[in-house]
Image (cartoon, rainbow, N blue to C red):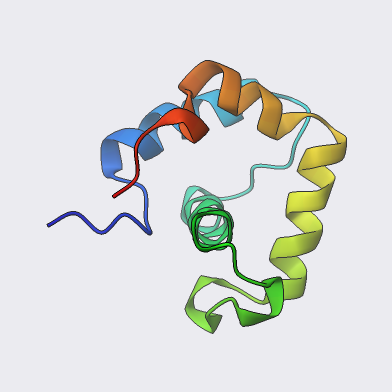
Length: 91
């Protein structure tokens, strides 16, 4: 069974290559970027409060601030448009 709280390697490679092309947001190291994106997806898929983010996914405040900056710079809109990330059936 696939863990739907994390990206697959294939999904991550597509998204990471798009992030590297997009100069609007901070990318950083591949490992930290993947952990950050998994944290954001964990929040969005569960409808959970930021403060309840597991420590293994990063400090909630840092993840929230980085997510907010991405929103201000339209990083998320670009990813959703290109990948259809929010339109997939999640079970």
